Image (cartoon, rainbow, N blue to C red; front, side, top):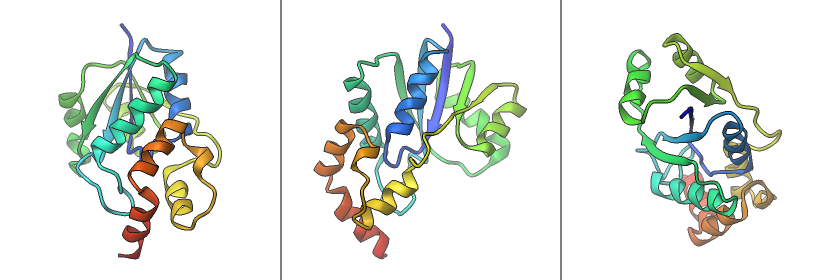
Length: 166
């Protein structure tokens, strides 16, 4: 079985991430989703916990009837020399890495992996979504409906506004 590995922070999981997973599943039979920076939460760049992010991903993929995936938490170690080996120790074997991060792509290419740079959806990224949430700008259409419901249940806008004031 050909497996791909898609790593991201998913802060929050949005329609661009969903498109990347769908595109990957056109090339591989199973996608391993790595929730990066999994040990961080409650800060501007990483407001949501790893469990909350996993819940968002699972809800969005369930709505799309996508079942060919597994989720793993991938904490940062801040050491490029052993980063790939760290990831290899946490997730099952995979043949293709999917990432939008040039640095991550470089590290995995150096270790001999096939790397595919994902085509993000124009105008959709976690940073701008978080900023829009704080500024009360439009953002709801950028995330899958099940994710929107989770974010509402988490009172994410209120939480982000508090975090951004710190």
